[in-house]
Amino acid sequence: ASRAQPTPRLVMDFATLTGACVQALGKSYSGVFSNRESLAAALVAAGRRSGERVWAFPMDEDYDQGLESQVADVLQCAPEGEADHILAARFLKRFLEGDLPWAHIDLSSGTRRGGLAHVPCEETGFGVRLTLEALLGEQPLYLLQAD
Image (cartoon, rainbow, N blue to C red; front, top):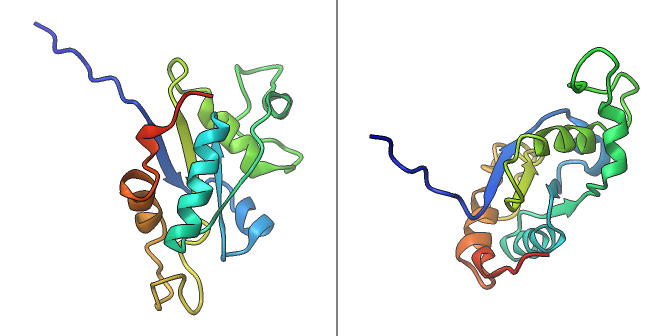
C-alpha cells in the first residue's frame, strides 16, 4: 500500500548559489526570488519587521534565455556571468511541480562583520527571524492569496 504524499502550500529554500547577491547588495541585505510577487513583497515586509532585510529581484521569463543550451536541456550556469543570482533562481524554479508558491532566499547575509539586526556576532544565523516573522508574525504567509 502506498501512502499519499502531503501537498505543500508553500516552498521556501535558503542557500547561497552564486555569490552574485553579495556583489549586488553587500551583506546588509539578502536577495529573495519568487514565482509570486505577493510572496516576494510579504517576505520583504517580514524582513523589515525582523531586521533581516531582503530585496526582491526580478524573475521574468526572458532571463531563461541565459540558461538555454544547444547540447543539454538547460545550462547549469551562464558562461557570460551576467545576473548569475537571477539565473540561478530561474534554474531552481524549473524543479517546482505545478504552480506551487515558492521563494528562494539567498544567504548572503549569513556572515557580516559587526553582526546583523539583533545578532551582534559575525555568524548571523540569517533567515531564522525572517522565516519566523513571515510564517507566524503580523501578516502570516498562509493568508496570501494567489497572484
